[in-house]
Length: 169
Image (tube, rainbow, N blue to C red; front, side):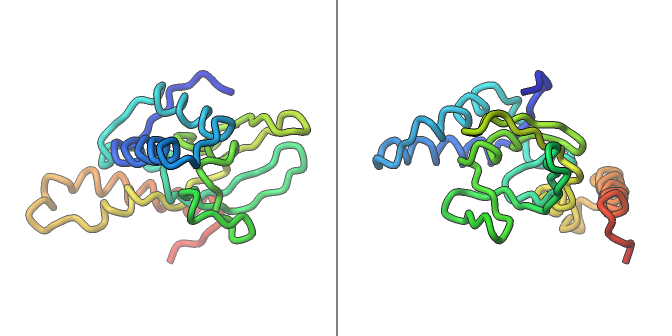
């Protein structure tokens, strides 16, 4: 586990805190799965959704993940437990790997304890983040105020597509 600061959006923080509370109240509580997420929520720096950097993994972000032991890489989406489907690349936030990835950034290495020992993964690229995508739906009256931010995010989006091997359209 690295000691870097983890940033979470206010919306993700609220939804995940609510999820843990609901699980505990409804009896779906599994301390083994929830403990790591609860710790991450307690230690994270919470920022408004519009201020989260585009290369940070948030809920429903799509990213490439490389297993540093095998070299294998695959694309995943970080999702809520009811949306999870590992075969479709939908990784639950309650899975140890999912919890470890929340708040990670491009090129971060995360270490996850699994029954067979520790696994290390590298985030290859965050190529879709819902919060960054919202920047492209700027209302007409805020175009001038948001133009610099939208321009930076647009450049970042193009750079991410190039780094992740996607061609410019």
